[in-house]
Amino acid sequence: MMLLPAIFTLDIDGRPTLAFEAKNLRESQQLCHEHWLRQDIAGLMSNGEPLWDGKARLRSRRSTENEIAAYRKAARDSKQTEGDLLLAYLVVLDDLQDASDKA
Image (cartoon, rainbow, N blue to C red):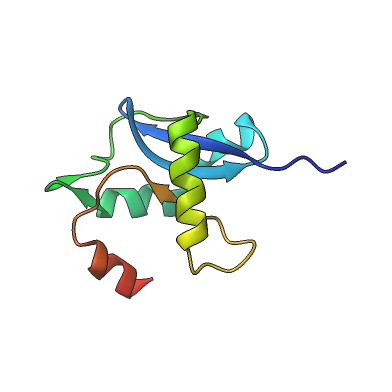
């Protein structure tokens, strides 16, 4: 029997910021240490503030029902191919149009 990946939320300094799938809590915690993710979130802005200042604590945890619903909606709306890691942002990103043009 294959278990479906669970949905986890990345909190930045206690603020729910993005939801993603992982096999387990350990895998979700490893994402917090990924260089590419740290670069991405340091370069994104929400309400004129960087999502991550490079110092605030990054923590992953199991998502709440509302966060899971937001992730599932993002997954339905996504144009990503199967197998790609989908990051569903739970905050409003500035210049989202610019960011999606680069993706």
